[in-house]
Image (cartoon, rainbow, N blue to C red; front, side):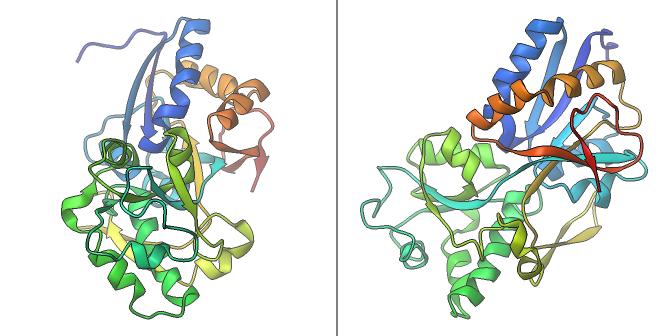
Length: 295
């Protein structure tokens, strides 16, 4: 592999950030002259590029903050910064079967109908995939229907599973699926219609963390044969700069740009629910992260 130039930034992105962050990365490149090499994909897939393939980027931005302490700290990273929220929704389009009928009350019934094609993401690759299954578990209790999770899962079969949120959204946009379980930000950035789920199950309400934590599941870990337990919790995105980042100076410049009020506002306009202040966990985070608070 050819060595990177000094003004390169290699960034691994959660797929759900691909569309909204593209203008930010393009503007950063234009302003600084940095060559930005971006790779988008499912968050667990991005982590395994580091832990299994030993491919070290300059910045990692993931859809689940807990993935970093579970799989990257302390060997590959010393700190991480939470920077955005999200919530689960049911997304659809005007072309979806029963689009004129579905609402916040009847969605569990409609998404179990045999004439609809329902998609989800792979829980062993993408946080939105395991969050879908955790949401199903919470729905069992909220709707007082012990068989609901099994019914919803059965009607989102393996043929309709895709590796990440962006690929799933593309199938919905193409009309190959009627409904998908995805993030609200993905639905909004693609112009989809969506059903807002009750806060008791959408994993988007920080005040309901204890209720979310009552459900959990196992997914594949950072290496073949390993598993980790993921539990229900409010959805938080996080970023880090790996310890051996090949262009640490470029990473700091990008964090400086990313966390300015203007960039934060631009990302909110693009439907990324940015936190008021980044929340840093661990030691060694660069001072270029503006307005950060520690936890």
